[in-house]
Image 1 (cartoon, rainbow, N blue to C red):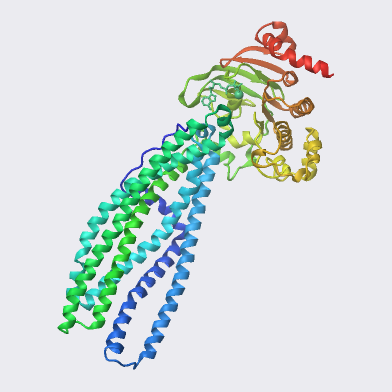
Image 2: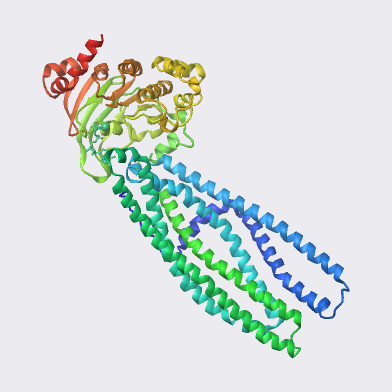
Length: 608
Ligand SMILES: Nc1ncnc2c1ncn2[C@@H]1O[C@H](COP(=O)(O)OP(=O)(O)OP(=O)(O)O)[C@@H](O)[C@H]1O
Ligand SMILES: [Mg+2]
Protein backbone atom coordinates (compact mmCIF):
# COMPACT_ATOMS: atom_id res chain seq x y z
CA UNK A 1 0.00 0.00 0.00
CA UNK A 2 1.23 3.44 -0.80
CA UNK A 3 2.72 5.29 2.12
CA UNK A 4 2.47 8.55 0.27
CA UNK A 5 0.31 11.10 2.08
CA UNK A 6 -2.05 13.39 0.27
CA UNK A 7 -1.73 16.77 1.84
CA UNK A 8 -4.77 18.66 3.03
CA UNK A 9 -6.09 21.36 0.79
CA UNK A 10 -7.39 24.74 1.77
CA UNK A 11 -11.09 25.33 1.92
CA UNK A 12 -11.42 28.93 0.87
CA UNK A 13 -10.94 30.37 -2.54
CA UNK A 14 -7.30 30.89 -3.06
CA UNK A 15 -7.01 34.06 -5.12
CA UNK A 16 -3.27 33.76 -5.49
CA UNK A 17 -3.70 30.38 -7.07
CA UNK A 18 -6.27 31.63 -9.53
CA UNK A 19 -4.10 34.60 -10.39
CA UNK A 20 -1.38 32.12 -11.30
CA UNK A 21 -3.84 30.17 -13.42
CA UNK A 22 -4.54 33.31 -15.42
CA UNK A 23 -1.13 32.73 -16.96
CA UNK A 24 -2.52 29.62 -18.62
CA UNK A 25 -5.55 31.50 -19.87
CA UNK A 26 -3.61 34.44 -21.35
CA UNK A 27 -2.71 32.73 -24.64
CA UNK A 28 -6.44 32.27 -25.20
CA UNK A 29 -7.60 35.73 -24.19
CA UNK A 30 -8.82 36.47 -27.71
CA UNK A 31 -10.92 33.30 -27.74
CA UNK A 32 -12.17 34.10 -24.27
CA UNK A 33 -13.24 37.61 -25.31
CA UNK A 34 -15.09 36.14 -28.30
CA UNK A 35 -16.68 33.56 -26.04
CA UNK A 36 -17.91 36.25 -23.62
CA UNK A 37 -19.53 38.14 -26.50
CA UNK A 38 -21.22 34.95 -27.69
CA UNK A 39 -22.54 34.14 -24.25
CA UNK A 40 -23.92 37.62 -23.62
CA UNK A 41 -25.66 37.59 -27.00
CA UNK A 42 -27.01 34.14 -26.25
CA UNK A 43 -28.40 35.27 -22.89
CA UNK A 44 -29.78 38.44 -24.43
CA UNK A 45 -31.69 36.56 -27.11
CA UNK A 46 -32.90 33.95 -24.60
CA UNK A 47 -34.32 36.78 -22.55
CA UNK A 48 -36.11 38.30 -25.53
CA UNK A 49 -38.34 35.28 -26.24
CA UNK A 50 -40.85 35.87 -23.40
CA UNK A 51 -41.15 39.45 -24.64
CA UNK A 52 -42.12 38.06 -28.02
CA UNK A 53 -44.78 35.92 -26.34
CA UNK A 54 -46.06 38.96 -24.54
CA UNK A 55 -46.26 40.85 -27.82
CA UNK A 56 -48.04 37.95 -29.51
CA UNK A 57 -50.60 37.66 -26.71
CA UNK A 58 -51.30 41.36 -26.44
CA UNK A 59 -51.38 42.01 -30.21
CA UNK A 60 -52.67 38.82 -31.80
CA UNK A 61 -54.32 36.54 -29.26
CA UNK A 62 -56.35 38.96 -27.13
CA UNK A 63 -57.50 41.24 -30.00
CA UNK A 64 -58.00 38.09 -32.08
CA UNK A 65 -56.27 39.30 -35.26
CA UNK A 66 -53.34 38.11 -37.36
CA UNK A 67 -52.47 41.51 -38.72
CA UNK A 68 -48.71 42.02 -38.86
CA UNK A 69 -48.01 38.42 -37.91
CA UNK A 70 -45.77 37.97 -40.98
CA UNK A 71 -43.13 40.40 -39.74
CA UNK A 72 -43.43 38.92 -36.30
CA UNK A 73 -42.70 35.45 -37.63
CA UNK A 74 -39.69 36.66 -39.60
CA UNK A 75 -38.18 38.24 -36.50
CA UNK A 76 -38.90 35.06 -34.57
CA UNK A 77 -37.22 32.80 -37.14
CA UNK A 78 -34.20 35.09 -37.53
CA UNK A 79 -33.67 35.03 -33.78
CA UNK A 80 -33.83 31.23 -33.70
CA UNK A 81 -31.30 30.92 -36.52
CA UNK A 82 -28.93 33.39 -34.85
CA UNK A 83 -29.30 31.53 -31.61
CA UNK A 84 -28.43 28.16 -33.18
CA UNK A 85 -25.32 29.60 -34.80
CA UNK A 86 -24.41 31.16 -31.51
CA UNK A 87 -24.62 27.79 -29.79
CA UNK A 88 -22.45 26.16 -32.41
CA UNK A 89 -19.80 28.91 -32.18
CA UNK A 90 -19.66 28.99 -28.42
CA UNK A 91 -19.26 25.21 -28.21
CA UNK A 92 -16.35 25.18 -30.67
CA UNK A 93 -14.70 28.19 -29.05
CA UNK A 94 -14.97 26.82 -25.53
CA UNK A 95 -13.70 23.46 -26.85
CA UNK A 96 -10.63 25.17 -28.29
CA UNK A 97 -9.89 26.90 -25.01
CA UNK A 98 -10.43 23.67 -23.07
CA UNK A 99 -8.10 21.61 -25.28
CA UNK A 100 -5.49 24.34 -25.51
CA UNK A 101 -5.19 24.90 -21.78
CA UNK A 102 -5.19 21.18 -21.07
CA UNK A 103 -2.40 20.66 -23.59
CA UNK A 104 -0.31 23.53 -22.23
CA UNK A 105 -0.53 22.36 -18.63
CA UNK A 106 0.28 18.76 -19.55
CA UNK A 107 3.24 19.89 -21.59
CA UNK A 108 4.59 21.88 -18.69
CA UNK A 109 3.98 19.00 -16.27
CA UNK A 110 5.63 16.50 -18.56
CA UNK A 111 8.63 18.74 -19.01
CA UNK A 112 8.96 19.11 -15.27
CA UNK A 113 8.76 15.34 -14.79
CA UNK A 114 11.64 15.00 -17.24
CA UNK A 115 13.74 17.41 -15.22
CA UNK A 116 13.01 16.05 -11.78
CA UNK A 117 15.73 13.99 -10.16
CA UNK A 118 15.73 10.39 -9.11
CA UNK A 119 15.01 11.41 -5.53
CA UNK A 120 11.62 12.84 -6.56
CA UNK A 121 10.68 9.53 -8.14
CA UNK A 122 11.86 7.76 -4.99
CA UNK A 123 9.21 9.51 -2.91
CA UNK A 124 6.33 10.02 -5.34
CA UNK A 125 4.09 7.15 -6.47
CA UNK A 126 3.63 6.82 -10.21
CA UNK A 127 -0.16 6.66 -9.76
CA UNK A 128 -0.12 10.09 -8.12
CA UNK A 129 1.81 11.61 -11.01
CA UNK A 130 -0.47 9.92 -13.52
CA UNK A 131 -3.56 11.32 -11.81
CA UNK A 132 -2.07 14.82 -11.92
CA UNK A 133 -1.22 14.57 -15.59
CA UNK A 134 -4.55 13.10 -16.68
CA UNK A 135 -7.71 13.67 -14.66
CA UNK A 136 -6.58 16.80 -12.81
CA UNK A 137 -5.43 18.65 -15.90
CA UNK A 138 -8.51 17.81 -17.91
CA UNK A 139 -10.79 18.77 -15.02
CA UNK A 140 -9.04 22.08 -14.59
CA UNK A 141 -9.09 23.01 -18.28
CA UNK A 142 -12.68 21.87 -18.52
CA UNK A 143 -13.83 24.08 -15.71
CA UNK A 144 -11.87 27.09 -16.86
CA UNK A 145 -13.44 26.92 -20.32
CA UNK A 146 -16.96 25.72 -19.54
CA UNK A 147 -17.15 27.51 -16.21
CA UNK A 148 -16.58 30.74 -18.10
CA UNK A 149 -19.39 29.81 -20.48
CA UNK A 150 -21.86 29.15 -17.67
CA UNK A 151 -20.81 32.10 -15.54
CA UNK A 152 -21.10 34.69 -18.28
CA UNK A 153 -24.31 33.22 -19.64
CA UNK A 154 -25.90 32.92 -16.20
CA UNK A 155 -24.76 36.35 -15.02
CA UNK A 156 -25.89 38.09 -18.18
CA UNK A 157 -29.17 36.21 -18.15
CA UNK A 158 -30.06 37.17 -14.59
CA UNK A 159 -29.12 40.82 -15.06
CA UNK A 160 -31.05 41.15 -18.29
CA UNK A 161 -34.13 39.40 -16.89
CA UNK A 162 -34.06 41.50 -13.77
CA UNK A 163 -33.82 44.61 -15.92
CA UNK A 164 -36.74 43.56 -18.10
CA UNK A 165 -38.91 42.59 -15.13
CA UNK A 166 -38.27 45.89 -13.39
CA UNK A 167 -39.02 47.69 -16.63
CA UNK A 168 -42.27 45.80 -17.21
CA UNK A 169 -43.61 46.26 -13.71
CA UNK A 170 -41.25 47.18 -10.95
CA UNK A 171 -43.59 46.45 -8.04
CA UNK A 172 -44.40 42.98 -9.26
CA UNK A 173 -40.71 42.44 -10.00
CA UNK A 174 -39.60 43.36 -6.49
CA UNK A 175 -42.17 41.08 -4.89
CA UNK A 176 -41.26 38.13 -7.13
CA UNK A 177 -37.54 38.60 -6.55
CA UNK A 178 -38.00 38.78 -2.76
CA UNK A 179 -37.23 35.03 -2.54
CA UNK A 180 -33.74 35.54 -4.00
CA UNK A 181 -31.91 36.48 -0.77
CA UNK A 182 -33.34 33.40 0.98
CA UNK A 183 -32.23 31.28 -1.92
CA UNK A 184 -28.70 32.68 -1.81
CA UNK A 185 -28.34 31.90 1.89
CA UNK A 186 -29.64 28.36 1.45
CA UNK A 187 -27.40 27.83 -1.54
CA UNK A 188 -24.32 28.75 0.43
CA UNK A 189 -25.30 26.33 3.21
CA UNK A 190 -25.90 23.42 0.86
CA UNK A 191 -22.83 24.03 -1.23
CA UNK A 192 -20.59 24.00 1.81
CA UNK A 193 -21.98 20.63 2.83
CA UNK A 194 -21.72 19.18 -0.68
CA UNK A 195 -18.20 20.49 -1.01
CA UNK A 196 -17.05 18.94 2.21
CA UNK A 197 -18.06 15.48 1.06
CA UNK A 198 -16.86 16.06 -2.46
CA UNK A 199 -13.45 16.93 -1.15
CA UNK A 200 -13.40 13.71 0.83
CA UNK A 201 -14.41 11.79 -2.28
CA UNK A 202 -11.60 13.35 -4.29
CA UNK A 203 -9.01 12.61 -1.67
CA UNK A 204 -10.06 9.01 -1.34
CA UNK A 205 -10.20 8.68 -5.09
CA UNK A 206 -6.63 9.84 -5.35
CA UNK A 207 -5.57 7.22 -2.83
CA UNK A 208 -7.55 4.56 -4.65
CA UNK A 209 -5.78 5.42 -7.89
CA UNK A 210 -2.47 5.07 -6.10
CA UNK A 211 -3.38 1.75 -4.59
CA UNK A 212 -4.84 0.58 -7.88
CA UNK A 213 -1.62 1.38 -9.64
CA UNK A 214 0.47 -0.47 -7.10
CA UNK A 215 -1.99 -3.33 -7.21
CA UNK A 216 -1.59 -3.67 -10.94
CA UNK A 217 2.14 -3.09 -11.25
CA UNK A 218 2.75 -5.38 -8.30
CA UNK A 219 0.20 -8.01 -9.28
CA UNK A 220 2.76 -10.70 -9.93
CA UNK A 221 4.49 -10.11 -6.62
CA UNK A 222 1.15 -10.09 -4.85
CA UNK A 223 0.24 -13.42 -6.33
CA UNK A 224 3.49 -15.08 -5.42
CA UNK A 225 3.20 -13.86 -1.83
CA UNK A 226 -0.49 -14.72 -1.59
CA UNK A 227 -1.31 -11.20 -0.49
CA UNK A 228 -4.45 -10.90 -2.56
CA UNK A 229 -6.74 -11.04 0.42
CA UNK A 230 -5.00 -8.34 2.44
CA UNK A 231 -4.70 -6.07 -0.58
CA UNK A 232 -8.36 -6.57 -1.27
CA UNK A 233 -9.22 -5.66 2.31
CA UNK A 234 -7.16 -2.48 2.14
CA UNK A 235 -8.77 -1.65 -1.15
CA UNK A 236 -12.26 -2.29 0.21
CA UNK A 237 -11.58 0.04 3.12
CA UNK A 238 -10.74 2.82 0.73
CA UNK A 239 -13.70 2.17 -1.52
CA UNK A 240 -15.94 2.02 1.57
CA UNK A 241 -14.87 5.53 2.60
CA UNK A 242 -15.37 6.64 -0.97
CA UNK A 243 -18.85 5.16 -1.02
CA UNK A 244 -19.94 6.85 2.21
CA UNK A 245 -18.71 10.26 1.19
CA UNK A 246 -20.20 9.90 -2.29
CA UNK A 247 -23.58 8.99 -0.86
CA UNK A 248 -23.56 11.96 1.53
CA UNK A 249 -22.55 14.32 -1.27
CA UNK A 250 -25.34 12.88 -3.40
CA UNK A 251 -27.93 13.28 -0.61
CA UNK A 252 -27.12 16.94 -0.14
CA UNK A 253 -27.04 17.51 -3.89
CA UNK A 254 -30.41 15.89 -4.33
CA UNK A 255 -31.95 17.89 -1.45
CA UNK A 256 -30.65 21.08 -2.88
CA UNK A 257 -32.52 20.91 -6.15
CA UNK A 258 -36.02 20.56 -4.64
CA UNK A 259 -35.25 23.45 -2.30
CA UNK A 260 -34.35 25.71 -5.20
CA UNK A 261 -37.34 24.52 -7.15
CA UNK A 262 -39.76 25.16 -4.29
CA UNK A 263 -38.42 28.64 -3.67
CA UNK A 264 -38.60 29.29 -7.39
CA UNK A 265 -42.19 28.14 -7.34
CA UNK A 266 -42.97 30.46 -4.45
CA UNK A 267 -41.59 33.31 -6.56
CA UNK A 268 -43.69 32.19 -9.49
CA UNK A 269 -46.73 31.81 -7.23
CA UNK A 270 -46.31 35.35 -5.94
CA UNK A 271 -46.08 36.62 -9.49
CA UNK A 272 -49.16 34.67 -10.49
CA UNK A 273 -51.21 35.77 -7.51
CA UNK A 274 -50.40 39.47 -7.62
CA UNK A 275 -50.11 39.54 -11.40
CA UNK A 276 -53.46 37.81 -11.73
CA UNK A 277 -55.05 40.45 -9.51
CA UNK A 278 -53.46 43.08 -11.69
CA UNK A 279 -54.92 41.52 -14.80
CA UNK A 280 -58.39 41.50 -13.20
CA UNK A 281 -58.02 45.16 -12.33
CA UNK A 282 -56.63 45.71 -15.81
CA UNK A 283 -53.46 47.33 -14.50
CA UNK A 284 -51.39 44.56 -16.05
CA UNK A 285 -51.81 43.10 -19.52
CA UNK A 286 -52.20 39.36 -20.10
CA UNK A 287 -49.00 39.34 -22.11
CA UNK A 288 -47.05 40.93 -19.29
CA UNK A 289 -48.27 38.33 -16.84
CA UNK A 290 -47.27 35.47 -19.12
CA UNK A 291 -43.85 37.05 -19.73
CA UNK A 292 -43.42 37.47 -15.99
CA UNK A 293 -44.18 33.86 -15.33
CA UNK A 294 -41.61 32.74 -17.93
CA UNK A 295 -39.07 35.10 -16.47
CA UNK A 296 -39.42 33.82 -12.95
CA UNK A 297 -38.73 30.31 -14.24
CA UNK A 298 -35.83 31.48 -16.41
CA UNK A 299 -34.38 33.53 -13.61
CA UNK A 300 -33.87 30.60 -11.24
CA UNK A 301 -32.19 28.43 -13.85
CA UNK A 302 -28.82 30.21 -13.81
CA UNK A 303 -28.93 30.43 -10.04
CA UNK A 304 -28.86 26.64 -9.85
CA UNK A 305 -26.04 26.65 -12.37
CA UNK A 306 -24.09 29.06 -10.21
CA UNK A 307 -24.24 26.71 -7.30
CA UNK A 308 -22.81 23.93 -9.46
CA UNK A 309 -20.13 26.17 -10.97
CA UNK A 310 -19.10 27.24 -7.53
CA UNK A 311 -18.62 23.62 -6.50
CA UNK A 312 -16.79 22.88 -9.74
CA UNK A 313 -14.48 25.80 -9.17
CA UNK A 314 -13.59 24.51 -5.73
CA UNK A 315 -12.87 21.13 -7.23
CA UNK A 316 -10.81 22.73 -9.93
CA UNK A 317 -8.91 24.60 -7.27
CA UNK A 318 -7.93 21.36 -5.59
CA UNK A 319 -6.83 19.98 -8.96
CA UNK A 320 -4.88 23.13 -9.69
CA UNK A 321 -3.13 23.01 -6.33
CA UNK A 322 -1.97 19.47 -6.98
CA UNK A 323 -0.82 20.11 -10.53
CA UNK A 324 0.97 23.30 -9.58
CA UNK A 325 2.63 21.57 -6.63
CA UNK A 326 4.11 19.18 -9.15
CA UNK A 327 5.08 21.88 -11.62
CA UNK A 328 6.61 23.94 -8.79
CA UNK A 329 8.72 21.05 -7.58
CA UNK A 330 12.34 22.10 -7.96
CA UNK A 331 14.62 19.40 -9.33
CA UNK A 332 17.09 18.63 -6.57
CA UNK A 333 19.81 18.27 -9.13
CA UNK A 334 19.94 21.39 -11.15
CA UNK A 335 22.62 23.23 -13.05
CA UNK A 336 23.66 26.55 -11.51
CA UNK A 337 22.54 29.53 -13.51
CA UNK A 338 26.04 30.30 -14.81
CA UNK A 339 26.44 26.67 -15.84
CA UNK A 340 23.05 26.64 -17.56
CA UNK A 341 23.92 29.93 -19.24
CA UNK A 342 27.17 28.58 -20.61
CA UNK A 343 26.11 25.06 -21.57
CA UNK A 344 22.38 25.51 -22.20
CA UNK A 345 19.46 23.50 -20.88
CA UNK A 346 17.36 20.56 -22.04
CA UNK A 347 15.39 22.70 -24.43
CA UNK A 348 18.37 24.61 -25.81
CA UNK A 349 21.62 22.75 -25.21
CA UNK A 350 24.64 24.75 -26.30
CA UNK A 351 26.56 21.72 -27.48
CA UNK A 352 29.20 23.93 -29.11
CA UNK A 353 30.43 24.90 -25.61
CA UNK A 354 30.54 21.34 -24.30
CA UNK A 355 34.00 20.00 -23.61
CA UNK A 356 35.11 16.70 -25.09
CA UNK A 357 34.96 14.01 -22.38
CA UNK A 358 37.99 11.83 -21.80
CA UNK A 359 36.36 9.90 -19.00
CA UNK A 360 38.60 10.32 -15.97
CA UNK A 361 36.54 10.15 -12.78
CA UNK A 362 37.65 11.12 -9.30
CA UNK A 363 35.58 10.70 -6.13
CA UNK A 364 37.09 13.10 -3.60
CA UNK A 365 36.02 12.68 0.05
CA UNK A 366 32.49 11.92 -1.01
CA UNK A 367 29.79 11.40 1.60
CA UNK A 368 26.21 10.67 0.67
CA UNK A 369 22.81 9.97 2.25
CA UNK A 370 19.46 9.44 0.51
CA UNK A 371 16.85 12.12 1.30
CA UNK A 372 18.35 13.03 4.62
CA UNK A 373 18.65 9.44 5.84
CA UNK A 374 21.70 7.66 7.13
CA UNK A 375 25.03 8.05 5.38
CA UNK A 376 25.49 5.34 2.76
CA UNK A 377 28.92 6.60 1.78
CA UNK A 378 31.27 8.28 4.24
CA UNK A 379 34.41 9.95 2.95
CA UNK A 380 34.66 7.74 -0.11
CA UNK A 381 37.66 8.11 -2.41
CA UNK A 382 38.25 6.57 -5.81
CA UNK A 383 40.19 7.49 -8.93
CA UNK A 384 39.28 5.95 -12.26
CA UNK A 385 41.52 6.48 -15.28
CA UNK A 386 40.02 7.36 -18.64
CA UNK A 387 39.08 4.15 -20.42
CA UNK A 388 39.43 2.02 -17.32
CA UNK A 389 36.72 -0.46 -16.43
CA UNK A 390 35.86 -1.02 -12.80
CA UNK A 391 33.88 -3.96 -11.50
CA UNK A 392 32.04 -3.49 -8.21
CA UNK A 393 31.23 -6.51 -6.11
CA UNK A 394 29.85 -6.81 -2.61
CA UNK A 395 26.85 -7.78 -0.57
CA UNK A 396 23.43 -6.45 -1.29
CA UNK A 397 22.94 -2.97 0.15
CA UNK A 398 26.69 -2.34 0.36
CA UNK A 399 26.39 0.78 -1.80
CA UNK A 400 27.44 -0.35 -5.28
CA UNK A 401 24.49 1.20 -7.12
CA UNK A 402 24.83 4.29 -4.98
CA UNK A 403 28.44 4.83 -6.06
CA UNK A 404 27.49 4.42 -9.68
CA UNK A 405 24.41 6.66 -9.43
CA UNK A 406 26.59 9.36 -7.91
CA UNK A 407 29.10 9.05 -10.74
CA UNK A 408 26.20 9.46 -13.17
CA UNK A 409 24.93 12.46 -11.19
CA UNK A 410 21.53 10.91 -10.69
CA UNK A 411 22.22 11.97 -7.13
CA UNK A 412 24.83 14.47 -5.98
CA UNK A 413 27.27 14.05 -3.08
CA UNK A 414 26.08 15.48 0.23
CA UNK A 415 29.70 16.32 0.99
CA UNK A 416 32.88 16.23 -1.05
CA UNK A 417 33.12 16.37 -4.82
CA UNK A 418 33.29 14.29 -7.93
CA UNK A 419 35.63 15.41 -10.68
CA UNK A 420 35.32 14.38 -14.29
CA UNK A 421 38.47 15.02 -16.31
CA UNK A 422 39.72 17.04 -13.33
CA UNK A 423 36.71 19.39 -13.14
CA UNK A 424 34.04 19.22 -10.42
CA UNK A 425 31.07 17.84 -12.35
CA UNK A 426 28.62 20.43 -11.05
CA UNK A 427 30.57 23.00 -13.08
CA UNK A 428 29.44 21.26 -16.21
CA UNK A 429 25.90 20.65 -17.34
CA UNK A 430 24.06 17.49 -16.37
CA UNK A 431 23.09 17.06 -19.96
CA UNK A 432 26.70 16.97 -21.05
CA UNK A 433 27.39 14.15 -18.63
CA UNK A 434 24.24 12.24 -19.51
CA UNK A 435 24.79 12.57 -23.24
CA UNK A 436 28.16 10.90 -22.69
CA UNK A 437 26.66 8.12 -20.64
CA UNK A 438 25.43 4.68 -21.57
CA UNK A 439 23.51 2.89 -18.85
CA UNK A 440 22.29 -0.67 -18.92
CA UNK A 441 20.09 -1.29 -15.94
CA UNK A 442 19.62 -4.33 -13.81
CA UNK A 443 16.26 -4.89 -15.50
CA UNK A 444 16.76 -3.22 -18.86
CA UNK A 445 13.84 -1.04 -19.79
CA UNK A 446 12.54 -1.17 -23.32
CA UNK A 447 9.89 1.23 -24.56
CA UNK A 448 6.89 -0.06 -26.43
CA UNK A 449 7.71 0.23 -30.11
CA UNK A 450 9.85 -1.73 -32.51
CA UNK A 451 13.28 -3.23 -31.85
CA UNK A 452 14.74 -0.62 -34.20
CA UNK A 453 13.14 2.25 -32.26
CA UNK A 454 14.58 0.87 -29.08
CA UNK A 455 18.11 0.56 -30.41
CA UNK A 456 18.22 4.08 -31.75
CA UNK A 457 16.47 5.57 -28.71
CA UNK A 458 19.56 7.56 -27.73
CA UNK A 459 20.51 8.58 -31.28
CA UNK A 460 17.42 9.12 -33.35
CA UNK A 461 19.34 10.25 -36.40
CA UNK A 462 21.25 6.93 -36.65
CA UNK A 463 21.20 5.28 -40.06
CA UNK A 464 19.98 1.77 -40.71
CA UNK A 465 23.48 0.40 -41.30
CA UNK A 466 24.72 1.83 -37.98
CA UNK A 467 21.79 0.22 -36.19
CA UNK A 468 22.54 -3.14 -37.76
CA UNK A 469 26.27 -2.79 -37.07
CA UNK A 470 25.61 -2.03 -33.42
CA UNK A 471 23.30 -5.05 -33.18
CA UNK A 472 25.86 -7.27 -34.87
CA UNK A 473 28.62 -6.08 -32.59
CA UNK A 474 26.71 -7.15 -29.49
CA UNK A 475 25.48 -10.39 -31.08
CA UNK A 476 21.88 -9.23 -31.14
CA UNK A 477 21.48 -9.23 -34.92
CA UNK A 478 21.03 -12.94 -35.15
CA UNK A 479 18.15 -13.25 -32.74
CA UNK A 480 16.54 -10.09 -34.08
CA UNK A 481 16.47 -11.56 -37.59
CA UNK A 482 14.83 -14.65 -36.19
CA UNK A 483 11.90 -12.53 -34.94
CA UNK A 484 8.77 -12.40 -37.00
CA UNK A 485 9.34 -8.91 -38.40
CA UNK A 486 13.07 -8.57 -37.77
CA UNK A 487 13.95 -5.04 -36.67
CA UNK A 488 10.31 -4.03 -37.06
CA UNK A 489 9.13 -6.46 -34.40
CA UNK A 490 7.09 -4.79 -31.67
CA UNK A 491 8.58 -5.46 -28.24
CA UNK A 492 5.40 -4.83 -26.28
CA UNK A 493 5.06 -2.57 -23.26
CA UNK A 494 8.31 -2.55 -21.31
CA UNK A 495 9.71 -5.09 -23.75
CA UNK A 496 7.42 -7.72 -22.27
CA UNK A 497 7.52 -9.91 -25.37
CA UNK A 498 11.27 -10.51 -25.10
CA UNK A 499 13.33 -12.50 -22.63
CA UNK A 500 15.61 -10.77 -20.11
CA UNK A 501 18.70 -11.85 -22.05
CA UNK A 502 17.29 -10.48 -25.30
CA UNK A 503 16.35 -7.24 -23.62
CA UNK A 504 19.92 -6.94 -22.33
CA UNK A 505 21.39 -7.50 -25.78
CA UNK A 506 19.13 -4.80 -27.20
CA UNK A 507 20.13 -2.36 -24.50
CA UNK A 508 23.78 -3.10 -25.24
CA UNK A 509 23.14 -2.33 -28.90
CA UNK A 510 21.47 0.88 -27.79
CA UNK A 511 24.47 1.78 -25.64
CA UNK A 512 26.98 0.99 -28.41
CA UNK A 513 25.06 3.01 -30.98
CA UNK A 514 25.00 6.08 -28.76
CA UNK A 515 28.78 5.61 -28.40
CA UNK A 516 29.10 6.99 -24.86
CA UNK A 517 32.39 7.81 -23.11
CA UNK A 518 31.05 6.38 -19.87
CA UNK A 519 29.39 3.05 -19.63
CA UNK A 520 27.51 1.68 -16.67
CA UNK A 521 26.12 -1.80 -16.27
CA UNK A 522 24.11 -2.79 -13.26
CA UNK A 523 24.13 -6.46 -14.01
CA UNK A 524 21.20 -8.68 -13.22
CA UNK A 525 21.75 -11.82 -11.18
CA UNK A 526 19.03 -13.47 -13.18
CA UNK A 527 20.39 -16.44 -15.02
CA UNK A 528 20.07 -16.67 -18.75
CA UNK A 529 20.79 -19.77 -20.79
CA UNK A 530 24.46 -20.53 -21.41
CA UNK A 531 24.20 -19.64 -25.07
CA UNK A 532 22.84 -16.13 -24.39
CA UNK A 533 25.25 -15.83 -21.46
CA UNK A 534 28.19 -16.21 -23.87
CA UNK A 535 26.69 -13.67 -26.24
CA UNK A 536 26.22 -11.21 -23.39
CA UNK A 537 29.78 -11.68 -22.16
CA UNK A 538 31.12 -11.06 -25.61
CA UNK A 539 28.88 -7.99 -25.94
CA UNK A 540 30.11 -6.62 -22.63
CA UNK A 541 33.75 -6.99 -23.65
CA UNK A 542 33.05 -5.06 -26.85
CA UNK A 543 31.13 -2.33 -25.10
CA UNK A 544 33.92 -1.86 -22.55
CA UNK A 545 36.59 -1.31 -25.20
CA UNK A 546 38.04 2.19 -24.87
CA UNK A 547 35.41 3.43 -22.43
CA UNK A 548 35.43 4.31 -18.79
CA UNK A 549 33.06 1.81 -17.25
CA UNK A 550 31.45 0.81 -14.00
CA UNK A 551 30.07 -2.66 -13.91
CA UNK A 552 28.17 -4.01 -10.97
CA UNK A 553 28.70 -7.65 -11.60
CA UNK A 554 27.47 -10.89 -10.21
CA UNK A 555 28.88 -13.17 -12.86
CA UNK A 556 32.50 -14.15 -12.68
CA UNK A 557 33.06 -13.76 -16.41
CA UNK A 558 31.88 -10.14 -16.32
CA UNK A 559 34.02 -9.36 -13.34
CA UNK A 560 37.06 -10.76 -15.06
CA UNK A 561 36.59 -8.55 -18.12
CA UNK A 562 37.13 -5.48 -15.89
CA UNK A 563 40.51 -3.83 -15.46
CA UNK A 564 40.06 -3.45 -11.74
CA UNK A 565 37.79 -5.03 -9.16
CA UNK A 566 36.53 -3.22 -6.06
CA UNK A 567 34.99 -5.10 -3.19
CA UNK A 568 32.52 -2.76 -1.47
CA UNK A 569 31.31 -3.19 2.06
CA UNK A 570 29.22 -0.66 4.00
CA UNK A 571 30.08 2.01 1.49
CA UNK A 572 33.84 1.49 1.80
CA UNK A 573 36.38 -0.14 -0.49
CA UNK A 574 37.37 -3.30 1.31
CA UNK A 575 39.70 -4.78 -1.29
CA UNK A 576 40.83 -3.72 -4.73
CA UNK A 577 42.93 -5.18 -7.53
CA UNK A 578 42.77 -7.55 -10.45
CA UNK A 579 41.17 -10.94 -10.24
CA UNK A 580 44.49 -12.72 -9.64
CA UNK A 581 45.70 -10.16 -7.10
CA UNK A 582 42.52 -10.42 -5.12
CA UNK A 583 42.58 -14.21 -5.16
CA UNK A 584 46.13 -14.16 -3.82
CA UNK A 585 45.05 -11.73 -1.13
CA UNK A 586 42.75 -14.47 0.21
CA UNK A 587 40.25 -12.00 1.66
CA UNK A 588 36.55 -11.38 1.03
CA UNK A 589 36.89 -11.77 -2.72
CA UNK A 590 38.57 -15.11 -2.33
CA UNK A 591 35.74 -16.27 -0.11
CA UNK A 592 33.12 -14.96 -2.50
CA UNK A 593 34.95 -16.66 -5.31
CA UNK A 594 35.16 -20.02 -3.63
CA UNK A 595 31.56 -19.89 -2.43
CA UNK A 596 29.80 -18.47 -5.38
CA UNK A 597 31.94 -18.70 -8.43
CA UNK A 598 33.35 -22.17 -8.19
CA UNK A 599 30.14 -23.72 -9.37
CA UNK A 600 29.93 -21.25 -12.19
CA UNK A 601 33.44 -22.02 -13.26
CA UNK A 602 32.95 -25.73 -13.03
CA UNK A 603 29.94 -25.39 -15.26
CA UNK A 604 32.02 -23.37 -17.68
CA UNK A 605 34.78 -25.97 -17.71
CA UNK A 606 32.28 -28.71 -18.33
CA UNK A 607 30.87 -26.74 -21.24
CA UNK A 608 34.29 -26.14 -22.82
N1 LIG B 1 16.48 5.34 -3.46
C1 LIG B 1 16.89 5.08 -2.23
N2 LIG B 1 16.36 5.75 -1.20
C2 LIG B 1 16.77 5.50 0.07
N3 LIG B 1 17.70 4.61 0.40
C3 LIG B 1 18.28 3.91 -0.58
C4 LIG B 1 17.90 4.10 -1.95
N4 LIG B 1 18.62 3.27 -2.71
C5 LIG B 1 19.42 2.59 -1.87
N5 LIG B 1 19.23 2.96 -0.59
C6 LIG B 1 19.95 2.43 0.59
O1 LIG B 1 21.32 2.67 0.42
C7 LIG B 1 22.10 1.54 0.77
C8 LIG B 1 22.96 1.11 -0.41
O2 LIG B 1 22.13 0.69 -1.44
P1 LIG B 1 22.63 0.32 -2.88
O3 LIG B 1 21.45 0.28 -3.76
O4 LIG B 1 23.72 1.26 -3.28
O5 LIG B 1 23.21 -1.14 -2.66
P2 LIG B 1 23.80 -2.16 -3.72
O6 LIG B 1 25.16 -2.46 -3.29
O7 LIG B 1 23.59 -1.65 -5.10
O8 LIG B 1 22.87 -3.41 -3.47
P3 LIG B 1 22.34 -4.53 -4.54
O9 LIG B 1 23.48 -5.46 -4.76
O10 LIG B 1 21.24 -5.18 -3.79
O11 LIG B 1 21.89 -3.82 -5.76
C9 LIG B 1 21.12 0.49 1.21
O12 LIG B 1 21.10 0.52 2.60
C10 LIG B 1 19.78 0.94 0.66
O13 LIG B 1 18.76 0.60 1.53
MG1 LIG C 1 22.32 -2.28 -6.74
